[in-house]
Image 1 (cartoon, one colour):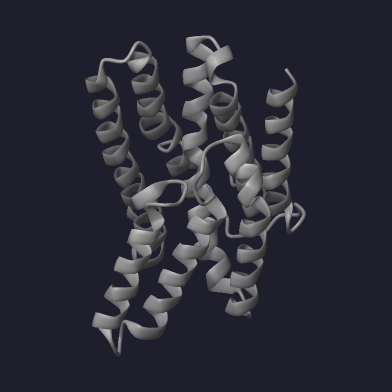
Image 2 (cartoon, rainbow, N blue to C red):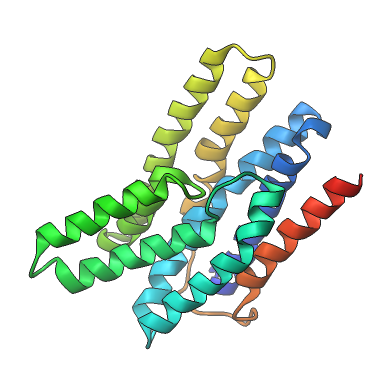
Length: 233
C-alpha cells in the first residue's frame, strides 16, 4: 500500500497526540498505556523531517516557507511550554533544519567552512528545542542521503543511539519510576521511530487532499486543549 504526504501527516499527528497525552497525564496513566502512548510518538519527527525536505524540494518561495514555520512556531510557543516543558517546540526544530538544508544548497559548494559554521550553530540552538541535538542531523540526513532505503534508515539509527543513551541514563538514576521511563524511551526510539521506515518507504510522492495547514493548526490547538483538561481535572 502506498501513502501520500497527507496520510503520512495524519499518522504523525496521531503519534504525536498519544505521546503528548502520555506526557501531560503521565502521573495518572498506568505503566502499560504510558509506555505505549510514549512509544508511538517516536514516529512523528522522522515523518515530519522527511516531509520538510519534500516541502523544500518543491517550494517556490523558501522565504515564505520559513516565515510560515516561524509564525506557527511562535503561536505554539506558550501552548507547548504550558502543556509540556520550557523549550522551543518541534516547529522551531523543523525551522532550524530548513535553515541548514537551505544553507547547504546555498553555500556548501562555494564555502564549506561557512556552511559547517551554520550547521554547528544550529546544533547548539537545537539543544533548546524539542528533539534536542538530534533534530538537525536527522533533517540533514534526509536531505543529503540519496539511496531510498538508506535515506530512511540512517536518520532512525540516530534516534536509536539517543534513545538507548537516554534510557541508560534514566535507569542509572535508580529512581522509583526509572524502569517505566526507560521502557518508554526505548519504545519511543526502537519501536515508534523505526515504524517511520516502512511508512516512508511507502510514500508515493503525492500530496493527498488534507488541509494545507492541518499539522500547523492542530499542533498548538491540541496542546492547549490537553493543558486545559489537565488543569481542570
